[in-house]
Image (cartoon, rainbow, N blue to C red; front, side, top):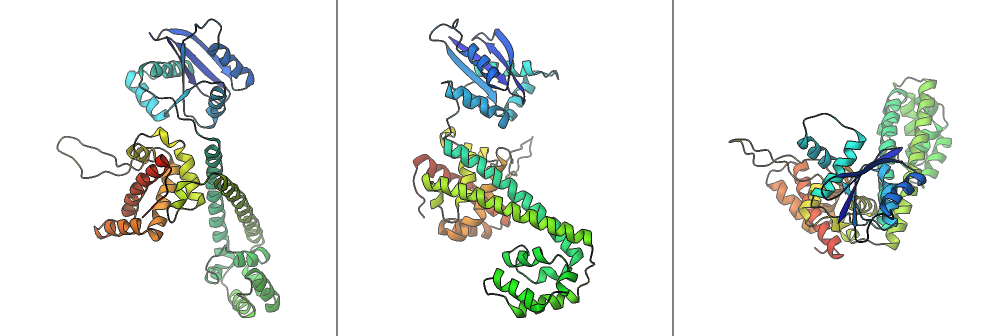
Length: 389
C-alpha cells in the first residue's frame, strides 16, 4: 500500500493533501513554517494508525528557499522527497482543466495526484559541501551584479566631474586609479593638488610603477578638463566608490570560502584548462548530484542550452534558438567557461576554430563549445575522472 503526500509550499504556511492509491483524499491540512508546523506534518507521516509496510511518498514544488528547510527536515527524519519542476507542474495542471481555479489546497492535491500517477524518482541527495557552494556562488553572483551597477553609476558621475579621467588608466577601478579617486573626487580637486603629493599616492598604490611624471600628466589634464564641479556629485562619487570597495571586499570573502571548500573537496572540473574555482563552484553547485541526470542531453536541457524545435506543416527549420530554461546561473557559468576554455585547451580551441570557419557567429560558436563542455563535465562528474586532451 502507498500513501501520497502533496505539499504546496508558501512563505508562512504550507498545505498538505494525503491521498491513497485510488486517489481518494484521506486528509487535508495546513501547517506553519516552523518547528510546531513541521512536527504536525511528522505526526501525519508517523501516525500510529498507519499500518506497517505502507510506503509514504512526499512531493513538493522546487520553490527555492521556502521549501529548503522543510525538505531537509523530512530527509533528516528518514523520508524521501520528490521536488517537481514548477514549470512542469504548471503545464500539467493547465492540460487537465480549462478552469482558472487555483487554491493552495487544489495545488497540494494535484501534487499528490502527480506522485500517484507519475513515473518519478526521489531526488538524489546533494552533499553538504555542494549546498554550501551553491549559497556562496549565488551570493557572489549577486555581489558582482551590484558592484557592476555601482561602477556604472561611478562612470556616469565621472563623466560630469572629470570626463577625461578614463584615458589615464587601463582600468578606472583598478587599485591605483581607485586610490586617486577615493582622495580626489573631481577635476577641480586634482587640479589644486601638488604634483609631489599626488606622486607619493601613485607610487605607493602602484608599487612604484607610477610617480611624478604620471602625477603631472593627471594634474595637467585636470586643469584643462571640461568637467563641471558639483559638491553633490563629488559626494555621490565618493559614496559610490565606497560601495564598490565594500562589494569587492565581500566578493573576496566569498571567494576565500569557496577556496577552502575546494581545498577539502577537490573537483574534476578544476582539471579542465581555463576553469577556475569560481566558475567550477557555480557549475557543480547548480548541477547538484550528477546522478539526477541519466545522460548529457538531460543536463543540457537543465542548463537551458538545448535548441528549441518548432515544426508546423511544411515548415521545418534547420535549427532553433536555445530554450533558455532551467538554471540561469548554470547557463551563465557554462557560457562564460566556454569563452575561457578554448584559450587554454587545444581540444576546445580547435573545436571553436572549426565552428568559426564554418561561418558561425562568435556567440553561436561559443554556444557549441558550451554544449561540448556539458558532455565533458557530465563524463568527469559521473566517473570522477580528470580531464585529458
